[in-house]
Image 1: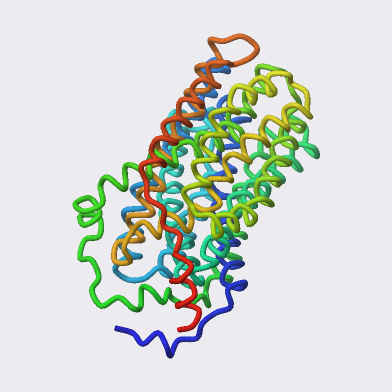
Image 2: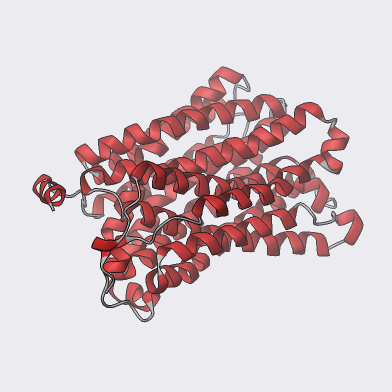
Length: 434
């Protein structure tokens, strides 16, 4: 066993900032694909399809990234539980960044035919594989350094990373959309955000190069030989419950940040730039509220906030689609912002909640697999389902609202079956004295 008392303990702000920056960069890579799928990939890579079918096909390649994420969680979770959390952060960043740059280099269907969407599919799979490992490593490294009484707060900083990554990805797309003509954007402009991922990955590697290993990992005497086998044997029910509980968060986020772009621009005739601004502004609100919700999680518990967020989501989905269907900027922003506030009420505390549910020897695998299976349930199919449901509805896509409400109720039931994990005040006080 390593003697953790002799280790240099990093400052929590520095550790949190490095974790935030890393997750922001990796989620930038993941989100820039979703934005491109909503706006341009359909006609470029599936030109034989109708506009609606092309969008569905592009969202299908988008969904492959979610299917790969649990596999990445298994692969990198094994590394994290056997060899440490820190190596996961470096390898996952290289994999995701390299795949993203490569997407920007893939020729279109007109150039190489069916090989183009196949290459897109393979690279999207690699993106998902890397991101499946990223979340577990970044969150655990922060959570396992954090003091017990402020674990939700410090662990929430990696959770701000997706909001930052989304704003970066869409900000680059918006800037290009404003400065380039439609023809230029379709010809080469959409590739620039993918190429930019290379520079961002280099920055992320520099930030993470000096991070110390988790003290909880170094304290372990006995590491699980095959963490996945132990998780499936002893914690399978917990994995299924956490996956079902998190499904609503993914469903909400990818409905408002991916499907809504396609719906508003194709069906309602809303300007691409207007829609990007509406979504980006709502995501900024979500990111700003994350630490506040995490503080509430440290004070009142993880599970109560998750239950409140799920209930709010179930109540808000029909108003959200009605506001979105107006095609007006302010109502659309309010609808999206309301959904993301419900989302962040849950997900601000998830980075502390999931690791606390699993014992340290299988924590990286268990937390990451549960988190990323939730992505398959809620994120992979939602843009496809929402697009199909909206195609058969009127101007207001009530079917999308019903679908999201059903997912929210499923997640509410799963959260209700999970235990509370917030450390008792007496435990926190003893830890502070040690």
